[in-house]
Image (cartoon, rainbow, N blue to C red; front, side, top):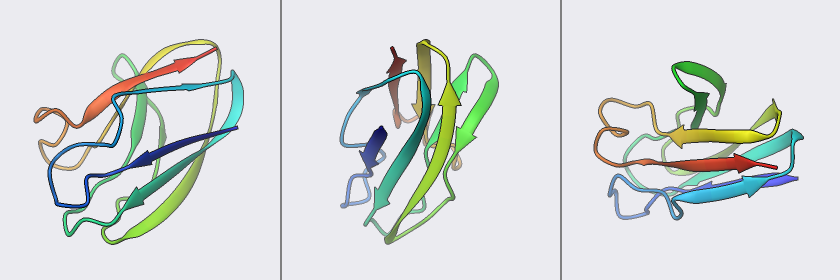
Length: 93
């Protein structure tokens, strides 16, 4: 199973989706960032960070996570990108 996210290629502080769904257990987080601005994907439950990709620019990366069923948030932890709206909901079923 894989969760795929892409950063806005024009440099806007946004992912290509605000919601993603994966099955419970292990899965890959595939992140593509073709923009000139550095971004990453961080998955958290409350204040606890559970998984994170590398922070990249003009490249792609993959990380893994192993999560039980529930709702999580994914966001970019670079600077104030999350506060500017670069986040979404990850549903694990």
